[in-house]
Length: 136
Image 1 (cartoon, rainbow, N blue to C red):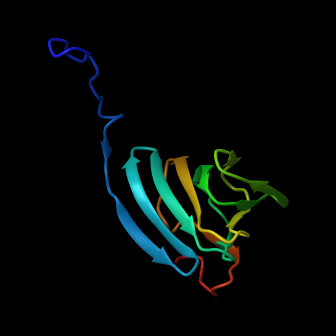
Image 2: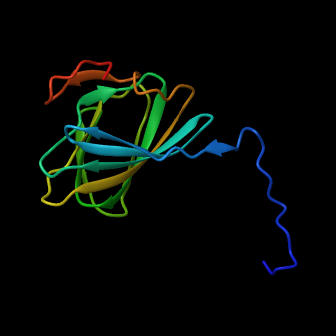
Image 3: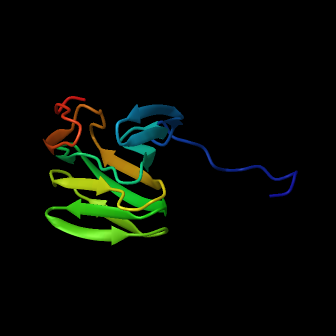
């Protein structure tokens, strides 16, 4: 656009988002909420080498994972696959899944959550290396 042009883009209330950028530490690494809006949340997740998240599922959200750097071991519905930088996977709602870093450098992914409810208390844990309950 030139200086004299104006944008015709306007955000409807459904499109408007609130930028959060809050980082939470976990035993396996950390996550930062980059953006959250109606029906979606975007996180940057960092997993320390040799660590993994719990085997879990969510009733109310699906997740898309995009690997930024490092190596991801993804377990989804009993199937394991290795993902590298610029590769992605989809985790449907109500599906057991786990993210793991089998590598020697930090794993960084971008997670896009979609669903009617995106709270952290929508985690059902089946296995956890850190003995956490389902509500943590």
